Image (spheres, rainbow, N blue to C red):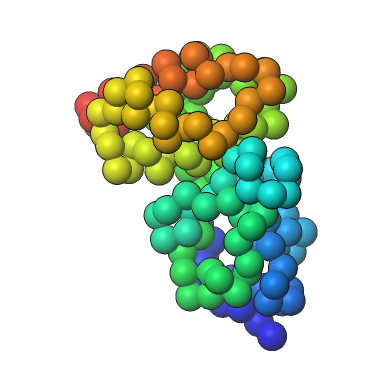
Length: 154
């Protein structure tokens, strides 16, 4: 059974079993490897994508649950690192190992879509579901603030 949905503005049809996690459809079927597998239990945030604008853990989201919906992945932010979040991530040297970064970016994008001027507490709350083994949380907060300012000025 083909499951139709949209990824980063492109219509797709997944050929996977209906209970297949969206993560594996994105990575294995659609070759979109920016979304990472971390824990497989929805606890680390590495697999965060947006479904109809809301952040979800793709390792815990069945592909049949996105039928007819819009999915956005880290590849959808920009192809050339021109998105303010990507620019801020680079400026503040957020990544160390980089494994959690796609999920971090997607959680930050969801936050800024709803709150264009987040406080430290807002950022910490929105990012609390994204674990970083390298401990770059202060850089994440600074980058989110910087990106928010860039987006407000645009």
